[in-house]
Amino acid sequence: MSSPPKLDIRPLLTQREVDASQPCHQEGCLSLSIASGTMAPALPAELVMIFDMSGSMQGESMKLLQDALEHVYTNLRPTDYLSMIRFGGHSSTDFTHWDKSTIESTGIDPFSMVDGGTNYDAAITGGVDLIGTLPGANDRSTQHSVSKQALFLTDGHPYPKNTADNSVNLAEKYPGLGFSFNALGLGDENTVDKPRLLTLTEVGRGQYFNANDPTELVAKLDKLLQLSKNVVYASLELTMVVFPGVEVNGVNVPVKALDILDQAGPGTHLLNLPDIEQGTSIEIQYEVKVAEPKPIGTVQEIIQWSVPGQPPVTSSIKWVAQNTAILADHNPRPTILGTVRDTMKAAKDGDTAKAMQLANTLTKIGETQGDPLATGIATKITDAQGSNVDIGEVLEDISSTKTNVDGTLKDD
Image (cartoon, rainbow, N blue to C red; front, side):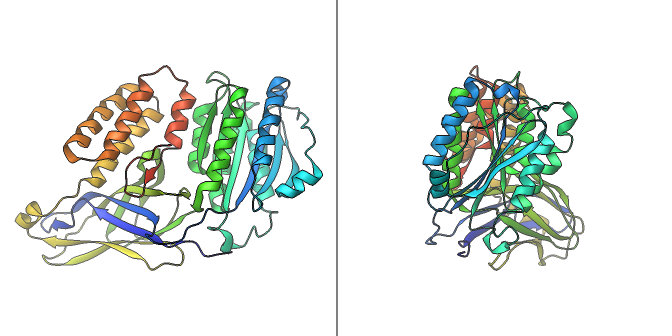
């Protein structure tokens, strides 16, 4: 396998020069994107489909699902592989690591129902077990050079209810195995627990897809297929080293309302981030505290950032006199990203009033600071809240939000 492409790692603090008469508490951000001039071809894909075949999928829904899967098979590239699990009250593996030629020569038998309920835990565990049998499952050299995507599709709530008790912890395992855990909710918000599915994709560093009815299955499965073909850096692992006397809080990916790490004291912390797609970047935002000021003129290293195979990049502050700190340059980007995070989180949580209030704030920020990301997010939230759409469409929009390399909002 080829080495992953080189990344530009660009840390930024609200204020580089800080007042030596008091503790430091400010916001920071970090941008990661493919380095300019670096070749970053689309990666081959390893797809694991985990499909609900409980009784509710019978009839027209099953026919439309099989038609949608035919579309997936037809559009696989020669370098792509597909595995299939179906579940009801238990999970069952239908085939593992088949390429397009194997599918064409062997054929796919019609799927049969799996009785006994809708067991999320059994299904997600089945995916973990299957991944462990894939070629090179324990070969870390493939970690960033294969687009590894799991898709969990269901048209109902877990049944019995306790069969999802471990689902979050199970989905959280996928990034450590090199896979993004994606979910597709089929049905309206009365039949599918869409907030739960979004939570699974958050911890699984994947995307949520929403299909209000089976006729949308081709479009949604095609969207996943295109996602797998657009990844240029898979399973991004960012190492954050926090230096002594420093505390980092609330590490997040603002445009996705994705929480990464609540609190980090001195030491080494591994952050699993979403895949990087062609032409996109990842921005993380956080708060940093330094409790003990240093003498005036001291340059203090506070955080070191690194990715596999590249030299680390260090964030530092300089302790200066109070008047110098007041006159020092302030960069608004970390604070803007903090407001983006709060806005997207309010929308995700269904707090329409707060989301709209924050969207208005972002509009003003965008106008005064000339920041198109702020304006773009404000427009996205305003349009979503102002229309009569299913919650799943809002959640899908939030889950799939991306930024361009220049930090602006990416139009899908």
